[in-house]
Image 1 (cartoon, rainbow, N blue to C red):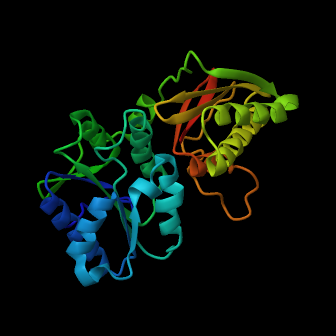
Image 2: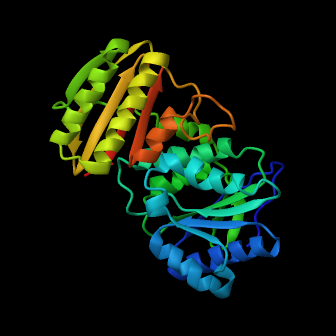
Image 3: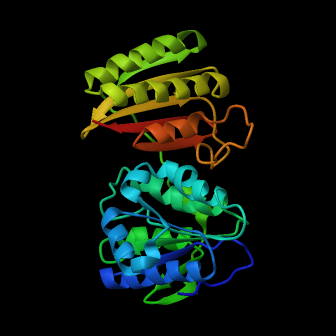
Length: 309
């Protein structure tokens, strides 16, 4: 496999595949091309596809980083800091090569908007960096709308072994499209807070998520995420906010609304610089939860996170 060269150091092709054999042939070729060039290689794809690549590589798989994306990328919001940037930053000299498959047929409709935004934001997170990130898409099992979005989030597309520039590439349009309005459930438990009620908000949250079935580590993760978001609202979101909590389809859903606006599309996805003070709250929420959805406008911001029971 040979990727189309661009004037930018970063290359981000989408691979459209239809069969396991096509998937294996294309991904193995991509990895071996990187190995021949002396590039560090990481592979982060769903478990069954991980085994296809390992088997196809044989002895060439030795020493490569393999991650099951259904675990490492369960929350798409932590893929950039916890998988892609983590690997790239560990190899700062020269080009790195990564296969990342964040969208598969098992993704839910609730998860997909965050997945699409993730694919779009890779372009901002790696602009000007010496990296090649190949993103496979299963043409046989994914909806046509998902494949259309892939053409917007990737400057080049590989289909049937041929790579061409995408005539639809516009990653910012995807970020904007999936900045969707979020409405709390009608039966949500609601608590309004300000600086003096931060402790009470955490107490309220703990009681509600316990009532819905969270305990142990999940309970602590929920409390930590609520503490980070409510504090952010007080410090950056107008000094007050509203906390809403409800259950939905085997998950606990928590939402924090305030009057602030997130101006940085990579907020929560950009690893902090060495010695940086603050700026870690939203990224921490990504790390301890299963999904984060955000809606932000001039009128305010809603951050919603999901924890599976």
